[in-house]
Image (tube, rainbow, N blue to C red; front, top):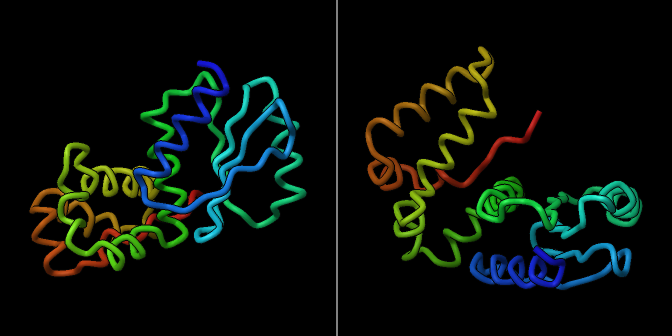
Length: 165
């Protein structure tokens, strides 16, 4: 895909996530960045060959921000989840639950079955490490016994995503 098409599709993706963003070019002609200030996250669209130069520039200019890189060769369906996980690590799901409370059940149980995807991603990150055994058991229980039941009991259950270690 071409860079302009990638930029357009990422813009649509972020609009569907209801986040405000601004577009900047830290390196004209090489990349486009979507700055999501509310969550300290940058979605950087790059050509694969220009990745290192763009990464160095973003590290310098946007120190402390979360950055998700999407290249023109990446699968946008998978990249969408990487963007969502980064946003979740910055409080996105809590914000979404507070801003759109009536939509959350639909979001969690919709076509993508996001609730189950969130749990599976958590389990992948925790990787059966003993220090995470409580969280692993709790998430496996919810996966087996019903996402809506847990959402009714604890609406904040789906608010967080652990950091990548």
